[in-house]
Length: 253
Image (cartoon, rainbow, N blue to C red; front, side):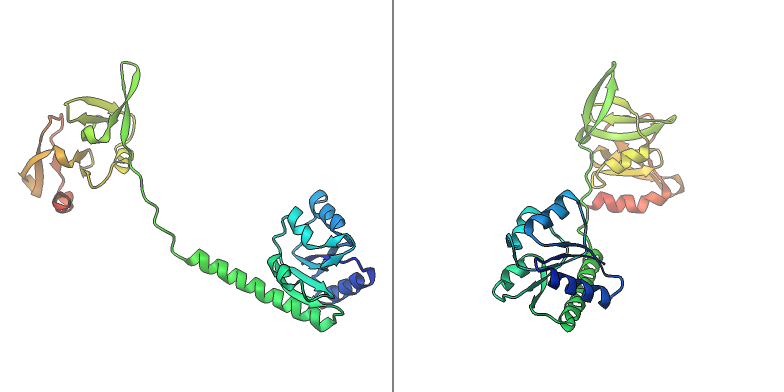
């Protein structure tokens, strides 16, 4: 763990560094800053990163809280000071502990244990957040499709589409106004872009708008043949496996 000490008393800084690195050999003090200015320089100009700060409150050039106004510090801070009346401000500034001077090894050990607990709780909180069910994503559907006519593109509103038909490897769009236009999409892509409340894929080659169906009747092999309000090249037949879900769909609001 990389640690930055902000302390204007050299003797105290050396003692703190010794205690930290003795407590755990993985602890490494990467910088000792004796002022607000020096700390900002280390963080801003040198770009030094740390996992933890040990910070005195009263420094030679002011209160260390000034550092937080100029540099974004997101890692935990343990404050070490001779004054107890800065505790509230300390905890507002990422403080996880507040040690009064003169401190001893036990004080530092307790603070580092508190850091471990804080880190564990943060990790558990993040895990719980990740495990929470996310809000369902609302699927959006096309309002129109672009078709090409005489070298120009123009939109056809979905509400005007009566039928989508796959004919000789080309997908065609039929409108309620008896127009027919090629679509440069696969029928699977078109199906995904249409609202399932309004459109139903009756077989592998055809998708029907609910309002295009005038009536239906049984067809051989337990299929259904549909009579539509428009004319189409292919006969609209509901495949045997689609009959039951199709009839259920027809009765839904």
